Structures are given as structure tokens and as C-alpha cells.
Image (tube, rainbow, N blue to C red; front, side, top):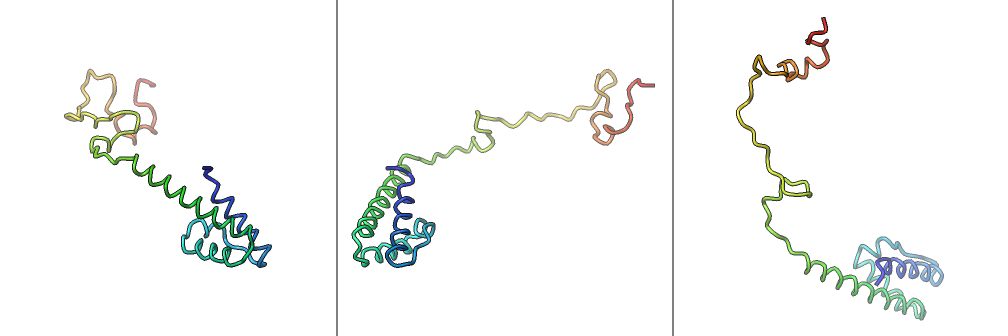
Length: 130
């Protein structure tokens, strides 16, 4: 069954009621709200118009088919307890970085300690530019 079937039927009901009674319905509310849809379907049944009565029956069948589809989708999806996956990106298992002792810059180190301070990034170069 097409995913937009309920929308098409509800729209046809709207225009049928607009033609038959001079007043339409809010299609969005009819699709979202069960009690609202039931009231509209009752009006369709009580109108005596064959087309509206047939559309009401089609809408009921479409609702039942969608409910069955949602129930089967919920039955297929099994929630698994995977605490290890909390910190993953979805592209594989990630592990927290191994953070050891903080390194202190040594005199032989190629990176000066000024590079580790963001404040010094905007100041003039402290390397041999003189």
C-alpha cells in the first residue's frame, strides 16, 4: 500500500464534504487525530452519499493497513543493550583516547611551548624571524 494513500483519501473526503455539505475538514487533523477522523467518518456515513461512504470505508481500511505495517515494523526492531556504542560515530567502535601523563616541552623538542598556548598564536612569531 502506498504511503500517501491515507492522505489522498482524506483529501478526497475533504472535497466531497465541501461539495456535499458546503464545509470541508482539516485533512492534517484528520490524519493525526483518531477521534477527529472518527467524527469525519461518521459524517460521511450519515451523509447518504455513496462516494463519501465508500471513501470512509477506504480510509478505515487504509488506517488498519498502516497500523498493521507499524506493528510489524515494531516487532522487527529489537532494542539491544549496547553500552559500548554510546561514544561511537556510527562508522565503527570508537575508544576514548589514551591520555597519559601531560608532556612537558623539552629543550630538544621541535615544538616550542608557545604553540601550546592559544594566546600566543596571534602575536608575532617567536621563532627566528629577527
